[in-house]
Image (tube, rainbow, N blue to C red; front, side):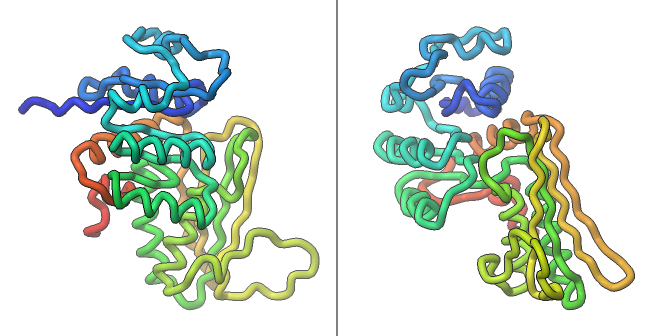
Length: 272
């Protein structure tokens, strides 16, 4: 059986995730890197993105979004909300599928992504790691079984350069727990504690954030009962895990019609 070749464009090509994605695409036999985007005025414009990994390719980094997308099936974007939304509009014009790993969107911005999915296929997930998405399925099971009587606390740690908190992954974990308990996260989330807070409300879900060093991403959800606790933890030691998951999403989206998908669709976990 001949493998389907998918053309891929990477946004934020010079960023930490951008470089990891470029290396992963250039190492994949069924993917072709046909676009690498950076902001206007970026010092890396015109450079060969493969130079970083010793695999020269046939393109250079550009800020010409429309031109780059004209050759592509899928754009992978792990940038910032404003940049991602600009790319989203360009993808709609080009009829180009999109994999969105960007975090930090507000509700209105998420609505724009939902609306765009009526016209193009989109995989939108705060974490592309296959392990994290298996973890989400485990959290739903634990949340359904371990209630009432178990308090839920979510702790996450990331590198010093991360600009949003809590992480998109931590929020998605909170949503998974809340939904399994018949709640809305917005109604029960507690994002910080200071001073005399009074007794813990058993219906709440607490979040704690750590930022420092070069931590790629650690997440722990603790279900704390009387006399016992269950902790479900995922630790990422390399951005390669997110890149490989994003490539799986790109392969998936290239074969799909318009719609909004997540990594559980990509990995076939929704039937579990």
